[in-house]
Image 1 (cartoon, helix red, strand yellow):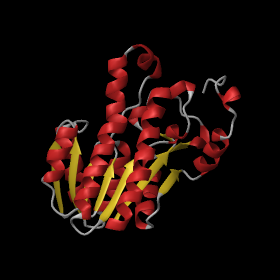
Image 2 (cartoon, rainbow, N blue to C red):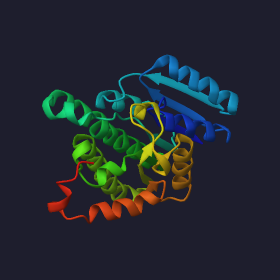
Image 3 (cartoon, rainbow, N blue to C red):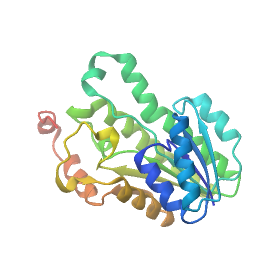
Length: 241
């Protein structure tokens, strides 16, 4: 199979690449850091990947995404894994920063999903997996800007899924909780709520193989968010989490 990864230098994407490489697939990897992409590509080849092509550029740019997808050959699986953990305190006062973060976490990811889904629809179908977040299930004090972007992305994927399934394209929304990655290095890791990138990658691959619509990773986040969503707003707005 031909697999496209957007945000290939993320910890979860790298874990997925290692798993998929053992199945002797071909990869097209997109990211911002050329040297890191080359290292990931070399590792994938050693693990069994048939062919690996890397492209370094501004993956948050819609124009870049348009050009990239226009040059793709047949694609069977795509994983959109780029993002940024928005600092809510900064977003409160810096609207340029807030807009940039929403572009990274929502607009650009949605653009890649739309472009790749349309590309697959004209080349025999496929699966597009988009990493959103449990943070998008309800706006919270501690991550309101990040959560809003992920809420938009999840809603967009839901609509895209409804539009694309009849065209032979499967759209998977991935909603992970806390992941022990460099992006979360500044946060104290506490207990069973934290998952490894490897576990999340395995869950994504299972979700693709089983043609799931939405996966919470780990699964217990579905129950946690069910409870969170049912807290009355009059109480919820007083909570600082």
